[in-house]
Image (cartoon, rainbow, N blue to C red; front, side):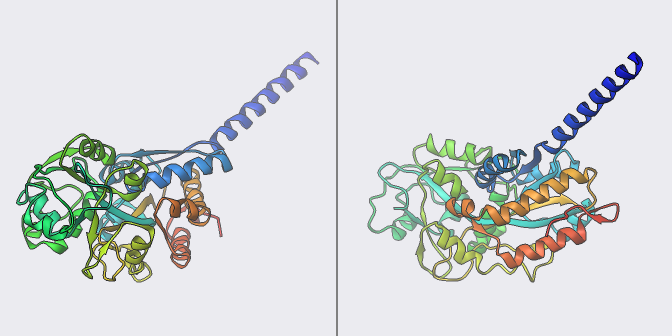
Length: 351
């Protein structure tokens, strides 16, 4: 009888331990890394999702280059990048990609006496600044764009990303389209050989360096600039109109994004046409393995993304990100079922 009771107690303890282990596994945080561009909205989504489901998100905002490396190395469940991977690289690494949000990158400045949104810049002038050809804020080219402002003779202190960054890719992609000099001498990528300036790690590093440097100029995603009260410039767009960074101007640029007609959802939306379009608009793509080692973790990640597409729209809008259209989300979910599988079955079992 004692043996039976002891055995029963052991069985109950083992069952309880098994239940606890299962609960812990079910509540395990999602893991991702990469894009700083998407970090502000990921952080807000993660807060709400944790409250709704008990599942958190451990996301490392280390730049697109770092996110690509980590997802390839399988140290995280998903990566996030603002530079889409090529078809060949996706195939080589057994990955799929799909867009999560669209938004805007803004030039930020630290200029005594100039308020946020007072200064106007254009792509040609920014290229000349980052090439080191324009060195003071009262240069004729900047004055021509700002006839009503009294610009100081302060030296321009150029700040750029030091890490591999999709924000840098989109920023330099824009400059390539506006400046033949930039195209010939520097080009566009997540990391480039900068002709001048100082490097700083992540959006936080760029923002802090600009804030601490009189005459500083840098570039960050608008949500980050807005949340941290950074002084930004307006821009002259492809239609020759002066536009402010906003949900409306990002949406105007994003309206040109033909994700339906693009293989692997690969669309770049810098310097888009339209009177209202913000010129340095960008997207963030999620990268995830087609045949994941941990199917359960990948399934949970896809559940989170499905929730974000549906229930995270207002949060994204409040931070001035443009949501992916429902018609494109339908295509994305179909691609999950077709391409992300384990043991011949789709990892994502949602609608």
